[in-house]
Image (cartoon, rainbow, N blue to C red; front, side, top):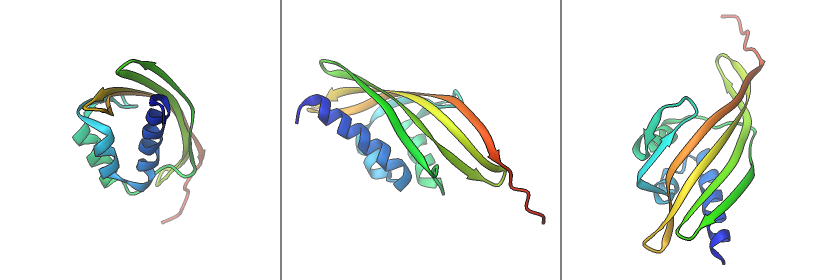
Length: 133
């Protein structure tokens, strides 16, 4: 398997880990010194992300990762993509889209993510929860 395919496979494992709440997989993929700017503009660490994933009770349903591109630079790579889907909560059902950039570096003969940027592109209510109490 060439490096491009190895990296795309690893990035797909990240995408698959979210809905399974697979903290162990994410812990392996993400470097200890990883930093992220999330969709709300907050700077979060690896530990904070793993806590979010572990404590989350739901993931978007349905959801789709697509428009994934890879740029290689010897021992570094950039993956960009889009996540879209539906979020359901007490306040209704929302359709959303996010764009993300993940930076990977080769360390100790394996790829690890060292930085991520998430941009919220769209979130709109598609239905309301008007249950009477």
